[in-house]
Length: 230
Image (cartoon, rainbow, N blue to C red):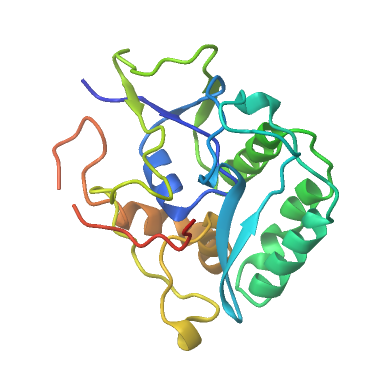
């Protein structure tokens, strides 16, 4: 049986690896009933700047977020992180070929003061899917299931993690990056890097980055580099 739906948690400006998996499914089911997990991509991403890799992290309100329902995790605004993140993105990608085409869409999202991390991540994901012209339907889980046995659903939850084992299906294909002459190719950054550098060609890079055939078709395995560490 072919797998039609990818079940996955929301990430902040997800990685190339995240999208390389998503494009293989016509439908996306977002895990909306999980508990927040510290040290994950849920509030982190990485971009390439003139000084190398820059890790961006969305600050969260004080308290123990571990085991807190993901929809209840609040964003902290004691620091002007939105302005800092946007300035960093603009500085890193202002000279990339396609930044000017997508800039306004992302700037509009960063101008909003989202109360919850889930809301921010969802709007960014929806913006990315729209700009990349991906035909992906979105739904949400209503309750948490540790193990999914529903036919047709590929459980990708925590498949893309900071501490997990290498993904045997993913090997990042190279493309021209803004600071490649200085640092060489840096794999698996935020999807922003690929989108701003390749524009409509981003999907082709994502397809080349998967070593196995799409779910439900006869198949083609290596490690990936993670730019973020704890």
